[in-house]
Image (tube, rainbow over all chains, first blue to last red; front, side, top):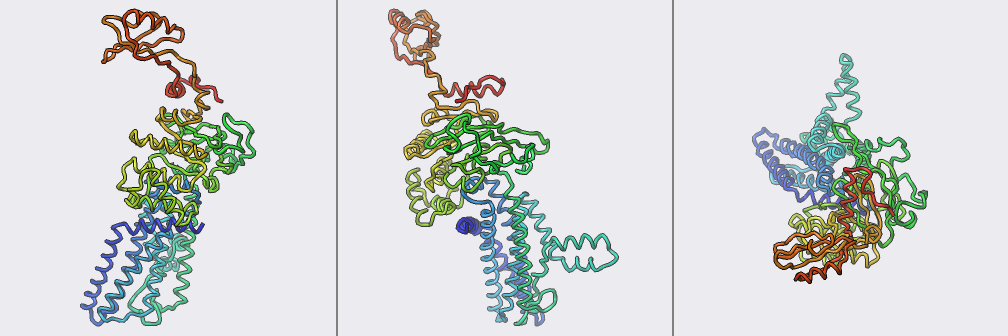
Length: 263
Length: 355
């Protein structure tokens, strides 16, 4: 089983890294970090904060966008190009195929996040700004966020077109970053119906805000999340939250994909 | 449309999926072929109904087909476009679910991973990952069969040589011609040295040399005691390599059996090719001959089985004609195919006794 999943993962990785748009995104991230360095120089004693803020934001944002683009095409292109006929006619289970595709995407996104992190760290190093290990906590959280987004994308890709999957995944990504607003709605006694809707949404949508990083408060000990200082225990909790949703979305994707006809 | 929708067509939920049935419970005799426990491929009352999008109209792609393919057979699966050939094959490959009926491969219920363990499959108009080279594609396929890297490489080398692609082994598949892709597809179907090879339209899109090569591969697989199940439109080629054939039309089996059983081997008449003296007509020599003068000045006269060939030839020779050739006419697979498939328009006609 592991060998077959690995074979699919390796093939997905091979396919992804040969896509030209990934090079374009990597260049975009490097450019954004360089722009952040210039922007920091114009700020008043906030050079480090701006560079970290923009660097971490670019990892989270461009990583998530890449996950959406790769994820919505992952299963759809296999079905559209009929390569799935060749693959699923082999002695494989459909869940192995979905897991292999997801793991291949995880390798690809991991490589991208590493490149993004390297770009950010390089800029900080060249500007002689402090690079702390806690910054890498932020990177870990960003990577988990990207993987959650990828799992959402693969779920929608298991039954809908890339455009619809992209819209749905993008919507969940947007809502997932608005969980503090949803909590405020729930806390408000005057908005009864909205409270119910907000409570339901909070239950279904992963809390992506939990992975949102503010580089301004990286202080050598903690990573700032939700405006409060947190340590590894918070990071681990957030990772657990992310892994739960990754598992949930993959199980749903497998359940749908396993029942599909491939005419 | 989802498989779930399709399965909703049946009244009995127990019949919904082919995998729920055990082939061992099947009746001992099917319409044709070996007993279920000895069959390589076994289908029992297999049906598939689609529901058209928007209109919701039911489309019966397969209406309950039953047959079995035995070990070592080369089995030709024939039918016009839309007859249900590819639907049947996709059910066997586990790509779509049956609405009704049961199927098994090597005694393993379909769909299941075990049923696909000993088979190699070439899909119709195969599509592969175009960014891969043939070697990489074979490596991927081999690993799905549990082969290690070394075994994949060794086998890939042998197969690429066998299908004539050794010169293109490191070229991305996107640069392959259609014929080369077909050969690469056959190579991936054979990577695990399967006991059963299922080929969906393996001859389509190939030039004559390519067709000959594919037919040679099918023959060599038979020599290796493999079972080959293939669909095709090219009837003359099917006739040359098949031990048995099934003709499918409108989702039903119209004829099935060995070619020697299906085709009437009695002469249907005799075709006489003559070079005539000026102003002579082939009908002048008696019999029920009819003919037309061809561009090269020769005439092809067709004699009915009742006509006496010796008398006809004697009269033609007396009249100064020169006999170019005398060929007995026998029923061809094409004639049988047309007869079976014409019944689409005329229900009740054209069915051939199933053996």
